[in-house]
Length: 134
Image 1 (cartoon, helix red, strand yellow):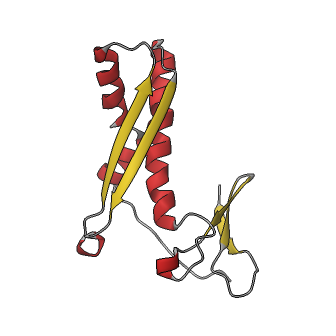
Image 2 (cartoon, helix red, strand yellow; image 1 turned 90 degrees about the vertical axis):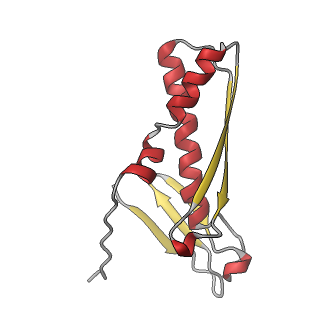
């Protein structure tokens, strides 16, 4: 599967369109970065992937275990003040509603900390190759 990003063709803008399978998501730079905020920034998408993974992981685990989860919300706050020095901090908060025991809530928190994207961001070495197309 390929993910593609292309400029949207509007002259003078920094907006691009991200395509993943049949999905299209606008992306842009922030106003501070020279864009028009016509979509999330790449950093926003990176942070959002963590939130989405935690939410889906918790939901699927709760369903498999028969836990009475009603709503799930994951908030991710970024501290990129030291990114140029090698530290990028994400603080995530999990809200889960339903008739859950404290033990079940603790179990869901533990599971959220082991979602695949969390592990990818913290435990896996990523190698990236970039080349020009012919």
